[in-house]
Each structure stands twice: as C-alpha cells, then as structure tokens.
Length: 432
Image (cartoon, rainbow, N blue to C red; front, side, top):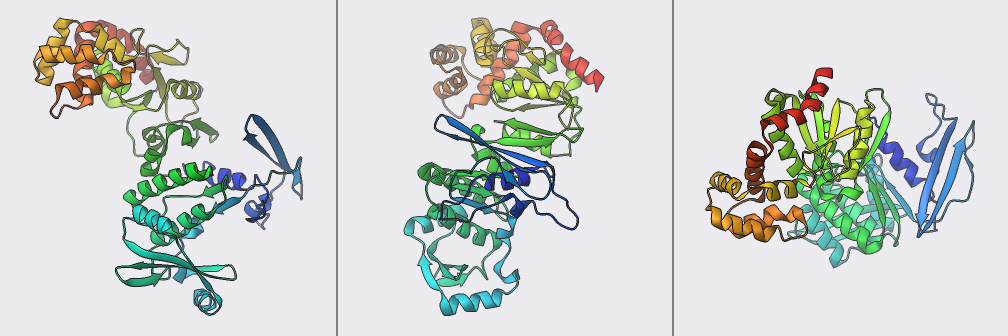
C-alpha cells in the first residue's frame, strides 16, 4: 500500500552490508538524508542476518547528528535499483554529452547469447544482438532487431529497464543482494510475469537474494507464498506485516473500491466455496455483505486472525480455518473435524453421490468409481482433480468440488447446522 513504508524497507535492506570490493557501500545517509525540511535523529535500525545456523544482529543508531554502528557490517555485493531506472535516456540532463563521451572513449560489452535469450523471453521480442557501450561510469544499451540497431535513447522505458536489470543480475557475483523498487514499472502484464520468472531462475542459479516491491497482481501471482510480505496501514495508521499471503488478499486490501461490510479470510479456494455455501444456506442475506478471500496456509490465517481481532486491519474482518485445525478464540473453524475435501467427499453417502452425479450430468457408477480411486491418494488436495481426470472430457476439478459441496451442505450438514455456524458471522455484521 502507498505510504506503508515499502521503499523505507528496501532502502534499509540496501544499507545492511558493506562493500565486498565489487560494488559501492550504501549508508543510511544515502537514503535518509538531513534536509532543510527533514531532521533525521532519534533513529534506530536493527539488521538481522542469518548465515547457516548463525544469526547476527547489527544495530545502527542516530541519536543526534551521526550514525553509530554497534558492530562491523558483513561484506556483500549489494545493488539498489530505484524507480529512476525507468527514466528514458533522452529525458536525462546532459544525455547528448553522455552519448558523445561513450562514442568517443567507450568500449563495447556484448551480451551473451543466454542474456539475449533472457531478454527475448521477458519482452517477447526477437533481438539478434544486445550490448552496452561504456565509458567512465556511463553506459548506453544498444539492441538489434529485424536488422535495425537502436540505443536506449530510442527504446521504451520498459525495454531499457529490463535490458539494464537482466544484465546487472546476470553479471552480479553469486550470493549478491539485489534490491528493486517497483519491479513492474513500465512493463505490460506478460512482460511482468516473464521478468519474475527470469529473476527467480537467476536467484536460484546465483544463490542471490532479491528483494523487490510491487503493486502488481501479475508479479504477486508469480511469486511463491514464502516470498510474499504484505505491509499495510491499519485504521490507526500503524503498520502491520503479514507473510505468505495470497495475491487476492493483498490486492483486496490495496483496493479501496469495495462495498462489502466484512472481509472473511480462509485458507484456499475450496474453503472459500464451502463458506459461501454455508452462508447461502444459513444466512443468505449476508452473501452480498461479505467478501471471502483465500489467504494461504492455516498459519497465515491464524496470524491474520490475531491482527483482525485487535481491529488492526484497514477494514473489519474475521478468519476461518479448516476443521482439522485446533480451535481458537480469534477465528472460526469449518464444520466437522477433517480437512474440507475429506469432510465432504468421505461424508457423502452413495445416495448423496446420485445427487452429485445429477449436478455434473454424469452417471453415478463411473463417478463413484472415480471417487473411490481418488480418495486413496494421500494428498486430499488432489482428490477433485483426480475425479475430474477419471471422468474425462472437459470436466473441471472446481466443478466437481462445487457439486459435491452443494450436496454436502444441503443433505449432510443441513440448514439448521449451517445457520448455527453462521451465527458468528451474523454477530460480526451486526457490530459493523
């Protein structure tokens, strides 16, 4: 969210190490300077780093005029790329002089075939060649496409920034720290997805740590849950940090164009649909008043429940975990004792499966055979997909789950039990 402190976190991370001799050393004053409008004092920053099993904490303080370090920072190659990287070359002051200096005193540094391939995959282009002409700390990126060669004075902002970024990450020493602000800037959705794919691959190959900020759903969806950290401002303008959240959860909190009165957070899409059917059966008038969002594993939901119970989310919210989780005071559990797939698929009788088959437009015999085979799989998350696969045709796993859930809520759980389960949601809506 804007104003939540993402850029501050990135700048602080960039100052966590001292140079290993291959890059410049960043200092807090580089990012948090004193100005005629800003007095930076009474500040303390803790850097916690882990090397193998060892954890170290280095603190830097600025009580008045000078920053004071409690210990020597570790050496590491560190890079910081802010949003100025997308400024077109021909808008920079002195760009004409830069061009002349590079032409007269520069040397060419061609990109490898692998680097050109990375550039092509990211931007969906067919560059034949790419290079940097460098001189005295200045550089001009040059690409060739369709027999035409042109520099970054005539490249789009996204094209220019991706060329620079991929070249930097590829050339960076192993185990480097690379910090990127607004990684998606000037890139269309397809290029955003492709860029993150390339960065993830390079980070793995080079064992590098890449920290980036983004407001893009396309970037968030490409990142594994462990790589997502969401910083939000609560209603008292205090910062809350949540880890492992889904892209939908992050985007819902970033978007103010919402009319629902209550956010309900659960683990995944299966739980989301089950909650929707429970509300439809037990508290139907509430369906238009709530937004249900899967946010990630149970640990994430439970952590979020603590934040929600304290009223520290931007909007009123409540959390629901699967029935196989322990009970808690800050969240609801789904009905039953098992994970949703186990509760539903194992709880349906043969007669219930007749109703499921009717909803799917299938014969009940093959459907029961598919179910009996699927539930032998240890991973219950795979059951819907296996049933859909065995039925064949264009059957979607989500359609199987929805049909089975509809019948389970109606014929196994029942309207009275659904209504009882929805009492907490009703109470939350009344308080809103």
